Length: 322
Figure 1 (cartoon, rainbow, N blue to C red):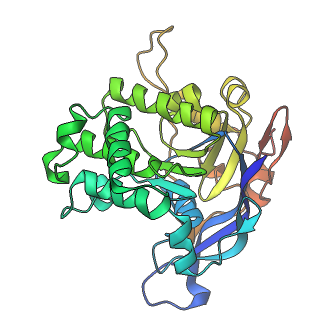
Figure 2 (cartoon, rainbow, N blue to C red):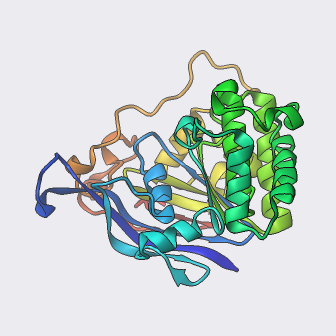
């Protein structure tokens, strides 16, 4: 059953400060996808592809002067992209949990970790102080904070960067949201802790039915945990489908390029593959397919007509070659 539905999402931001509406640059251009209850959708792409911006739009935290100028965002059948700030605040935390890349922007330095966890749970769940504090200790244990009984009364500055990120993950999950937007949740963590957090997200999706939008650069993480993957490029979805289909049989040259940059343990290589060139700026988007200036397989139609997503096997790909 679909929990989150994004349709034809368009996000525009002034290309330069102080410019008029006509000078808006389109950073997200017609993005559509669904996430079912209990499903993990991985979203991958280079920096600037629009992954984090899409997540921010869903949570109602789009940084100004950016704004949604087209499309819809629905949570469990209810449109949420036009809700007033007060209603969005009630949704965030209880129904939508968020894990941001930088834990320092999430944690309040003036309050202990325990106070922040307890306040979040008491705001959204019918719990007493004692019950919320007990749950807070449990969540710190679950995300791998050693000595949770003692560390619960510590302040954010008393934790390392990786430990703060684990606390942020606990803060996002403690109110048991229906949807989790996880933006690079394991970036600051070492490999063993990363595996622990991936297992925890997988457990939440399977046991509680939490829908997860996992934003990451790491195709390895996507292959391990996600059910489906959306590959974003220049504010658009280049390919979307089940993880095994997309990784084994990529239909878009950009997807193939991303997978080709992953080192193989089976074959020794003198040099890793790379995708030549850079992603175009939103205010200087080329005609036709946005990827064609970097595509080794491009031809005349790619430079003239923009391809739309269409079925290719078990996936959808926006490519004239597919």
